[in-house]
Length: 450
Image 1 (cartoon, one colour):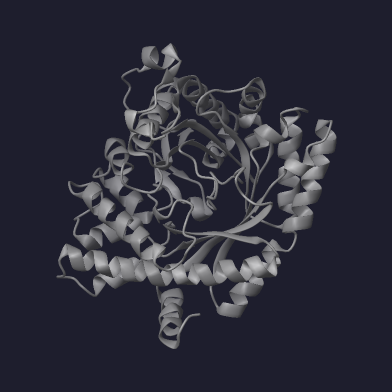
Image 2: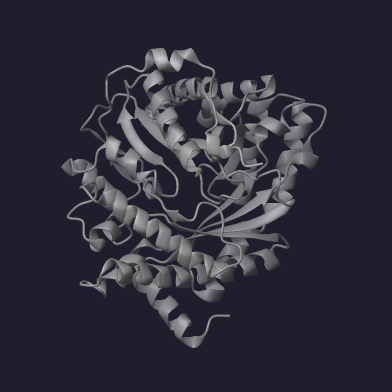
């Protein structure tokens, strides 16, 4: 339970510092929906989502009113659809069923149009991946992810090559809307099974039938706490971040436990991720600048981000027995006003962002790049990010948007939480021969732990 002082602090964090529950995500297993035909399977998928998650939005609103805590998004994640359609095919029919169910129950997004091919892809997984661009074009609320690498398996370079092509196809097919389809597509290394955040959420095979995962976010709260110690040393900075993360996670624990009970679902995890928005006062970049950087992207940025990420995780783990997901600091460019300013001023480059991903929660996220960027260059960006994840035994991801008709220096407006982004410069030097080789990059030596 929260005590009186914690309640008063929480009220201030909500009213003044942008603290919110970013998402309540219900994870659903669809394994019991598999039927003999694509149509029958799609119908079962639709029926189960509507039946089990039909009260998700209303429950979120009720909890928000009960505790006075903003709950921004209500979402659903499902078993990787590559598996659900393995015997019957009909992947586009399944995508449409997911989208129809999402519209019916009023959620923001549904994740799980997913394939896990870190070591190799079966024929049915290849067939599903081939449909991603069209699925994201035909649907509004479906999100897709593909895991192409893991520390235990290495990097599936055939899948890396394919996903560069899929990103390009998705960008082209949604070109009339600034290639927005790519904002719903993420390529992972070491994807986790309990991530509540889109576009990478899916319901892992190790999960229960029906699970509630909650994602909490409060960059503004952390920045405000640091403003109280303008001359503190870095030990004091770490302690302040940890104490703040503890308080924020307690809010998530309360919401997750209440939602699980009301929806008769298992309590999965609380994901404490400093997920920014384009609003002033809700920026991870501004936290780094409060620690002491003149502007995000300058020398010292990676070290500051490492400090922040570690302190957030340590504080959150003390507040809940079930901290999971990705938990840490996100650095999406288009969704963070400080990151946007850093790119616009020239202090933050793609190469610096890549270095930062070695120590943050995920990876290269919501980055707009020139529309003429080649498929092999996108594949190489994915491979670089996967290498960071595999070698460091952490989750990394790539969500880049090659915006058709846009060039370096232009700006693209996505709207809402997706924000806006300057088009970032990408090297024109070609990695074509490397990407064309295919095969696998072996797992690192330290993966052999049995």
